[in-house]
Image 1: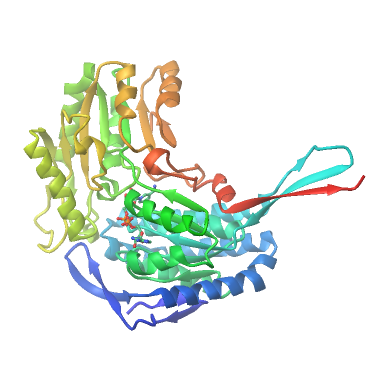
Image 2: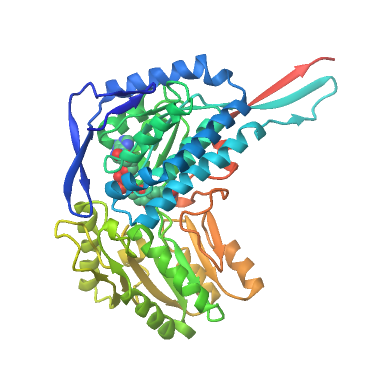
Length: 477
Ligand code: NAD
């Protein structure tokens, strides 16, 4: 049974209740986590505050960096163990789970190096004055993490917050806690002081809500659905607590007739099937120049048909979805497509070895999806790619921007001027030209516009969000 991790100690929830941990590959329970409550959050916030005041706030940035560097090395040392935990918990094929463990180490490495490079400025002002700015940590930060990339999102969110001088109370998703509990234990082993990283598990509407409401939380970093993002924003507004929101997407891959299709096809495919399509920045719409619509769809269709889906441990192209309700969600989208007469172009194959209770979904390519249909508008969060044709550049921009989201866009063209025009006109937080980095790039600031959220994580930019700026004006004559 898994316990909470508060002040470097494994502790049960005061509720005395637990939740089952289900293996998505066979639908069977194999472990338990704590079903925590507001008292557990209170204990974690108290431990974090004590750590902040007594130790963390006083630690030299270079020493914080050294601790993060040690944690990075420790994660790599334990990469096999973390891979196995994440794989069983989330149904990730081995190569994906391992990539996530390696990315976690890389986040800690990146932010280790950033700790002692974050500084304020001096500002020329009136005669007889000196003015300077200080970048100060918020203090105790809350981190609400989704289930799709627990380790990666923990790395970017907690790594950035610690580097900027904050301490952390973390609420992992109820479907994916195991790796994060272990990482907090590893942090204690390399010398993180008690209270710097605290993990409290349980349901979002119980323990997540308690975290968002706690008056001792000075900043909230939320990654999850737009619906819960709205709730977090409302709750935080009650006490004017700053929030970073990393929400969903309906990201377009825009392919012009002059693109290098040999390069584009595997990347477009990977951007929708990676992690079984359960990626906020999944390239879930492919907008294709009408001049190459039919031949490109045919190529994509062949690629889809070759995809094999099966249990995480088989390490195929695609693993199971996280849980039954997610599988049902994808089925609902596909049955809506059928009702609307949207043609299915191609599907991958679920292998015979896949256990019956697992949450499998064959990757599916849909064509001629009308721009107003929910398959062109809403996040499926499964391996479903919606294709549509555009007539010219203006039309491509119109389709690309025609959703409530704006997280990532991919633009495929050899025309240099068009690359810049399109990058400017597409409304999103990241634009990739002739490549696509679904979730990738530790160094690259990441975040959305519109309903994809606000604030930036990853890269150095994240450190500005995890700090507040103090202006000090000195009159010395
Ligand atoms: P979710 O919003 O249901 O849950 C996210 C987290 O919020 C979980 O830990 C959950 O327990 C918690 N939560 C739920 N209700 C809560 C409440 N009332 N108060 C406080 N916390 C609460 O999202 P999900 O289904 O876990 O993840 C999928 C969503 O996350 C997708 O929309 C996806 O696009 C988005 N996502 C975004 C990014 C990004 O960086 N932009 C990354 C990954 C996932």
